[in-house]
View 1: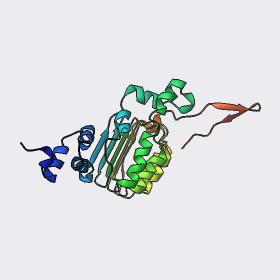
View 2 (view 1 turned 120 degrees about the vertical axis):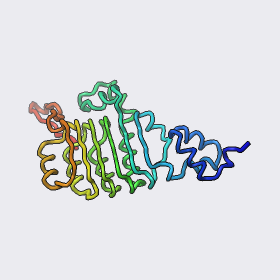
View 3 (view 1 turned 180 degrees about the vertical axis):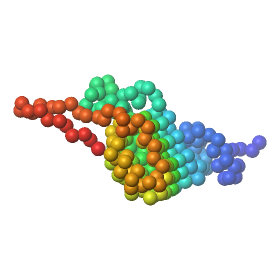
Length: 226
């Protein structure tokens, strides 16, 4: 009977390609040879995450072979909590967010450093992702052609500004991003007319606005974050 480790490298890579990331990781723990297959960059051209738990496990590899990266959190619990303005969150909501608040930001920072050939990035329901996180990817992945952002409430016109300096970008989607303005969209369309831009409802939604705070009897309005 032929043992798994007796297969040639090409056959092992083909076998691993049918497994989900966690199964690849578990199989890679069995011996050095299979660990080497798990760490083969060509095995990881696509990464999809559908929950914070999948991302936090870390059972994947970021490398130069990565072409498509997707983080889509459609869980009602996650999206509703993360999309609440920070000043308005209850202690329970803040506790839920604390477990994954920086998870996507860390992933994007690592991708900007290790995945120069990334071509497509999709973020949906990622309420803690900021303009700075997206700008890092645009700078570190000069070949990025498609950027899709949906229901990412901390994305503002600063991301549109960063897109102006991304010459390879061909498609930009900013759907249901409530802090994107009509003025920002108009400027992007004017200065990058060749860029396919979709912004469903974004500029029509109510942007975040922190409540006024009183200091020494006077009322001040907190500045929005970027």
